[in-house]
Every structure is written in C-alpha cells, then in structure tokens.
Image 1 (cartoon, rainbow, N blue to C red):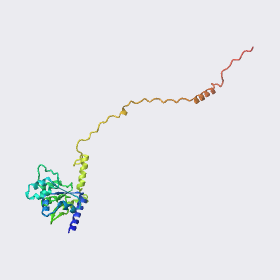
Image 2 (image 1 turned 135 degrees about the vertical axis):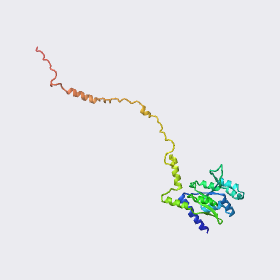
Image 3 (image 1 turned 45 degrees about the vertical axis):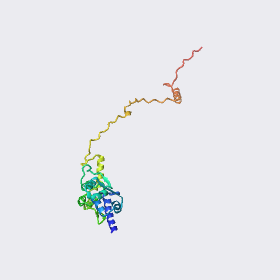
Image 4 (image 1 turned 120 degrees about the vertical axis):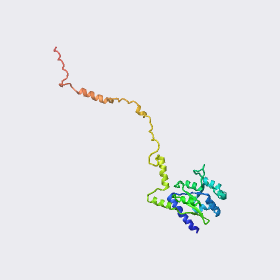
Amino acid sequence: MTIKRQKKAKKNINFYKHNFSFREPFQILIDGTFCQAALKNKIQIKEQMPKYLMGEVQLCTTNCALKELESLKDLYGAKLILQRYQVRNCKHFKNPVSASECLHSMLEGTNSHHYFVATQDQELTAGLKKIPGVPLMYIISNTIVLDKPSQCSVNHVEAVALGEMVTPAQQQSINSLKEVQGIGQDGERRGKKRKRKISNPNPLSCLKKKKKQPPTQPLKTEGEKKKRNRQRKRSKPEGGKGPSLKPLPNP
C-alpha cells in the first residue's frame, strides 16, 4: 500500500515539475488545521514530509495563521508545532485576517512562488482548486496525502499545449522583460522619453585649417647641370655660322 501511495505521489509531483516549474526545496504552506490533525494522528511532519515528497522541503506558515491559533486555546499544541516553521511575510501584518484568507492571498492568483498548501480546511481547498498549479496536501487515515491535480490545472496544461495560453513562469518572464524595457500592460512605454545627451564638439574639428603650400621642385643634381651645359655648347645660332673675323692688312 505504501509503494502504491509513493507512486501516485511521484506521478503528481512530476506533473507540477514539468508543467509548472516546481523545484526543490519544495515550499509548503501549513496552517493550524493541518498541525492539529498531525498531532491527533501522531504524525511527525518534519520527518515524514521529505520522505513522502522524495525531496528537500521548506516548511513555512504566515503570521495570520499563528495569530489565529493564539486566539484558540484548544489548539495550543498545534500552535507549538506551527511556530517552529519559517514565517513568510504576508500583506496583513498590521491587520491580521483568518488563516484561510491569508494563505489564499499568498498565492496571488498564479502561485508564482510555487507553494504547496497543507490544510484540512475544505473551504480553503475548494478556493485553491480554482487556481492552476497549486498542489494540495491533507491528512487522511493517519497518512499524508498529496491530492491529484485539480481540473483547473489540467485544463490549463491542455490550453498551453494547444498554444491558447502561457504558463505562469512564461507570463512572469514576460512581465519582467516589460518592466526592464519600461513597457506597460497596454504595450505603451512608460515614463518620459529619454533626452539625448548633449555632447561637446570634437576638439580636432575646432583646429584651424592649415594652408596648403605649393609643391617644391626637386633640386637639380650636378649630373643634370653638366648635361644641360653640354647641350648649350653644342647648340649653334641660327644660320649655322659663327661670328665673322676682319682680314689683316698687307704690310
């Protein structure tokens, strides 16, 4: 019987792992009704819960759940068990509400923090079954039981497979990207447009332009000068005759 129960639990855990990105350590929100049932049936929650879920767990509760047990003197033993667990911050620090209302608000409609919820409150269980991706746990026949996925969770997975809906993890990543880009839910950018920073001119462009100097002719070498002088000596005046000489007189 124990092996069969473990197989069912493993199947349900894999459903939440693959479809809703649940990872260890599993966070389990516990209220006073679950602690009272565990005390009555002599169940060691801290020891049996990791064995049943086959992984590391974090047992936690809220300040509202503790306040509710403080007002009920008959549940003093359950209060001693519950106050050993981590207390997660809720929205009702100044004005505490009932444990069922507080635990329901902790999931925020999408269970983005991937909480398991352990409770014996049937009203709370009925409300949580309307939220996709919420594993529910309760005690029955002196054993801890992980309930099968709700019809809402199954419908959500089928819609995602058909491309009609995105998973909570995908929606969360989309929202975070929108916040980084400054885009609101309506698709428009939020805030003022970023002004372009005025930069100083390039210092190199402020320098005066240099005047272009005419290209200098290369100096003539001695060899070129001698060659030119030879050409001058060889050249003759027009007519081909040199200067005429006067004849000397006869003695």
